[in-house]
Length: 255
Image (cartoon, rainbow, N blue to C red; front, side, top):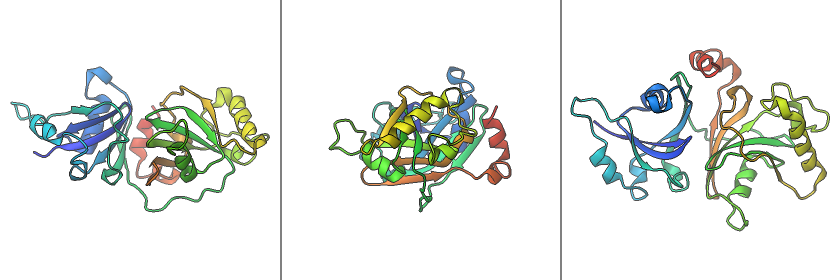
């Protein structure tokens, strides 16, 4: 039986498994007492393209079936600074598992969406996870965050963009609509207005230790993984698709 390589974002880790992606997602969400009923967010990797970056010989020797024939669910290969070490060309689909074990596959898009807003709201997912307001669209934001010449930078970042509704273009008077930061949206409005008032400030931290359990219904375009050399984009399904062909996952993700 073959083994697979998965790059988990929450928590950041490299995992070998004999389970196919959908089964692995269900296993992470509901298949263990240690983390029962928890979300999972991970990428499946091209094993061959990871050769040289990790000890795949160890994975081949240890990621084997149990004596009774049951597949090996997981073998952790790395838990530290994993995202930056994985070759970008090895990253394939993004998989989202709901806390009830429903799994959705997001495939990378060859094109980026149109970015026409004045301001953006980003939930950084890995390796850090603050909530950031910015005047920079995703490609410029990635370039800014991963630029080695800056005193503080990240080698690579996984993040998503969130819907600011009318506040994306009118921080002072725009309505937040279904903004997922409802209890303190006045603070977010203030952060956006601070960006508006500055000619040099490109980003503003809204929450330094924000929860990673963001509600999916507030995602604007989708997920991104980027550094100085590449930007991968994973579009989130449209409203019609979520209520149509992805209905089971969408319903599970909301409960």
